[in-house]
Image 1: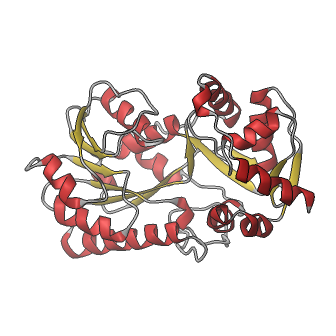
Image 2 (image 1 turned 90 degrees about the vertical axis):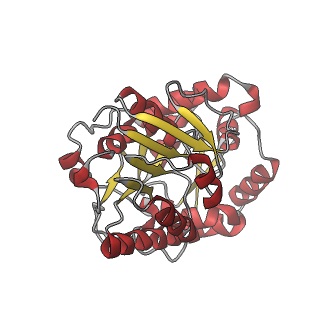
Length: 327
């Protein structure tokens, strides 16, 4: 599979940076196209970088010119209008177009566990998820009508050292470190799957240039499943503290902090367990190894390495204090 030409739209984000690095290691000829403004991560060695804006099909077209690619993967597509623009742009110019959807698109509440690729798609709570569903629909229609070579990938909650996978980010870890109580939605026992980007990349890169994957959909998640209380406690352990957890109904949190509402009610308040056997049948070396206990230590080390990475949101703190006072 060496020397396949891969265009990655994005390439410096939480997931896509790990994918880009592994693709280079696996021998792909990788071109990244993005706005070139990210300073969170160090530059990826061995890639060619172009400047373009994924929200503007004309900008991407100008960046890549008349080039063809064996594989195109778009990590910065969120609306069906973007997908339709990509279908026009890349039809006849790539042997595989990989769309990064979201496991949040699966029905909520989930009627049956574990979740598989055939679990129905319906999320009435979160517009982000509905846009992903509509984007998938556009790709399926294009594949059926014209053979557009789409592969759909559904990650669940994927993180690296830069992403604290709880609502509130560093503000919550700061509260833990200062001995202040922190909120956990519901009763803390619903189950959640966390996937490190390194592990995700193995599954994703294994699909690139793989003709068996064209016209199909694959979820890529880890097999590590934790109650939410355990997730908060692992973060506390990485900080060297025992967190004081206060449980508040997800609906109450969503009402007090509206920006958290869709993600909580439409995703995180529901138990999710995934069956990755379909992916493993195509990518046998997919075997997640990074537990969240390890991931949490990497997160704390990364944030502690630079004070500028640790802003505290006074408004969120005030809302948390009010919710806890009423609990």
